[in-house]
Picture 1: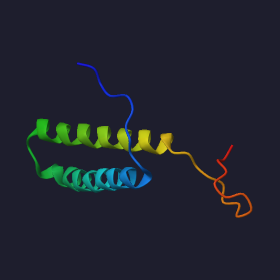
Picture 2: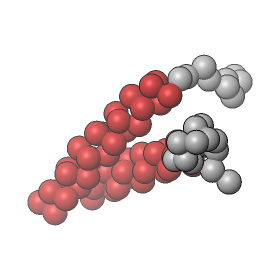
Picture 3: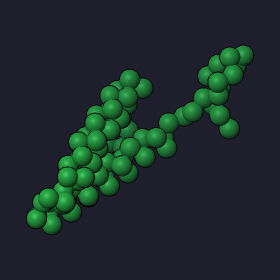
Picture 4: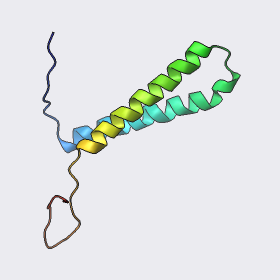
Length: 80
């Protein structure tokens, strides 16, 4: 099986994905903070792994964004 290496997503689509990931990260972080009451080490480790994976994915999205300078005289000029 081969993977699709290009996707046709607009900035709004990416915002929805990023927002959803941050919501899921918040849910899992809250669960992890209350995990001291859990006796199942595998469940706690699974939460940690999920938090790590989501954080890395949010970072990948962030690093692929093109940031623009806020100069009104030159709108939409990518930062150096």
